[in-house]
Length: 254
Figure 1 (tube, rainbow, N blue to C red):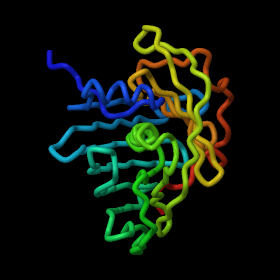
Figure 2 (tube, one colour):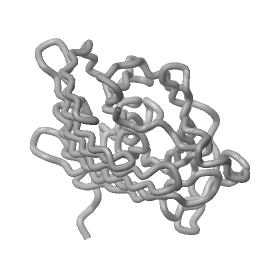
Figure 3 (cartoon, rainbow, N blue to C red):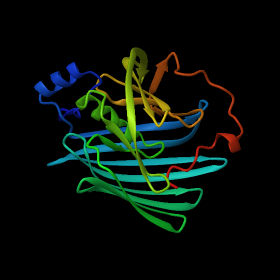
């Protein structure tokens, strides 16, 4: 069996150094997730990272169907060897409305093109080398954030948000005490971080190889949970589902 090479990422600088000394990198990495709301499954999401001669190629696919929200996303992305954004293309459908986005560095800026509801916009945003393309419900974006958090010591991180005409916001990434869980029935140590974007927090839980295990999303009651993973105890107790009109998150790319 070909030995898996780990993507250059970890939660602690010491671990990153050890991985670097070992020459660790990745040939392929993937994850499949359930999207839940208040403990009830409402969709699925997955990502795949593949190494290239110059960095990584990644894909993400998200499908969420519930009363009041029908959301599908497909993203392809090119990253450098140190997880910097090189190019991204996204196609999505939100309640039947098509959305298309492309983004890439252009000179000293990010150039982002968004087409939605029959309208198109082109926006130039401030360039930041620690930027993550950050659509809703995308586990691949969160996996990249974890990797960048290591190489940048949890600082100088930014979210490139494909909503409206596009925007870029700083990410505050804080580390909390480790927790415990099981993956495919086997105990696994769990790292806990909180990413705050524009004052809104997302709890991130990752494994010893910095793989994303779970994310408590800012949309009310929503979570991404890797298939086979159970956090013990749960991050939040289950609550009765709220009315769909109140619970549906805003469209990710509008």
